[in-house]
Image (tube, rainbow, N blue to C red):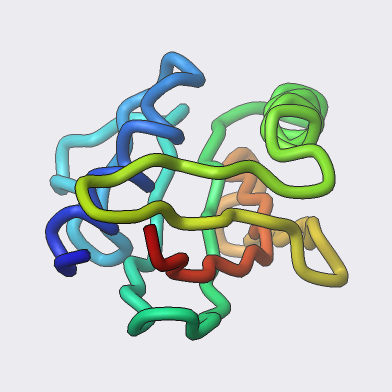
Amino acid sequence: MSVTETFGALYRFFEGFGLPVYAEGDAPARAKPPYITVRLVAPGWEQTAGFMVRLWYRGPRFDDAARMADAIGEAIGPGTVLSVEGGAVWLYRDAPFAQFMPFEADPMLKCVALRLKVQALVA
């Protein structure tokens, strides 16, 4: 399984929630919330790697971001398998799963950081 296949599987999964998805640190300057950023990782065969997904929203409260975090958590469940050519990646929640991050400089900007793990599986 290649790095490209792992990244593609993660992108496809998170794009399924109807928001734009960007690599962490690669969101265009013109991107307006809501959107998702993913810190991309690619573990080797039968290895596990932790990573963060951030949900970015704009508004007075965390309600919309919290609902999206719940939807992603429900879709992952106890773990979900994402198929790739020659194998699969197992995506599951880490603990604590969700961390709410306010920004004092911009109180309308809301971010929920999701802690996840991914494991590369041999076909």
